[in-house]
Image (cartoon, rainbow, N blue to C red; front, side, top):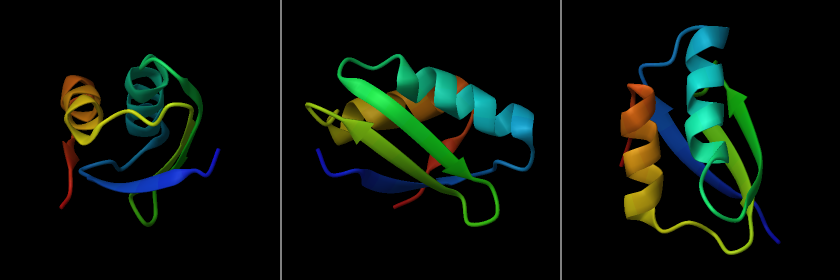
Length: 68
């Protein structure tokens, strides 16, 4: 189960990180979400890995935008 990393723009505080962790963490198969506020990178451990559309929807629901 190799982690994947996505970039999320607009996060600036722990509240932002918690919102993203909660939304992504609620996706089926996700077992871990680690947010690095400085870089905007979110490392996700999941089996199976959620598809890009599901990840984008979760990040959008948290109020942020997945870069790229």
